[in-house]
Length: 154
Image (cartoon, rainbow, N blue to C red):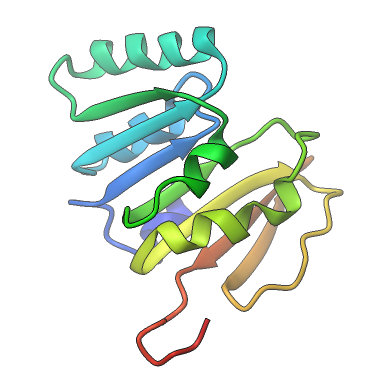
């Protein structure tokens, strides 16, 4: 996944959020590649504790925030927040995965990326920000880029 990301953006200095973070591996990989802040969001307390422990092992001073909350609900509440990279690996059969981009894309900074891992059988709706879809075994990865809203386009 990170080859896809680094071919599209410089992750150094990026502000990142890892939605449905689980162990935190995606966010921590971003940090190891130079991201300056990572927010981890998961509604499962045990998963969030594991992500916190893993971050401490990597760097006890890592600039991380941990939020116990449903990722979709959290994203919908982040009015005015800006992220360069949003990573999401929700449970494959979680409700609302196909439309997660609708609540995540407003969080992206100009040129920002949103990568959504999902079950390869999931059919995502067409979206002007969807750049590419890839399949790796049973996993699909949808790659979205922020839309330019300065011209009045959605």
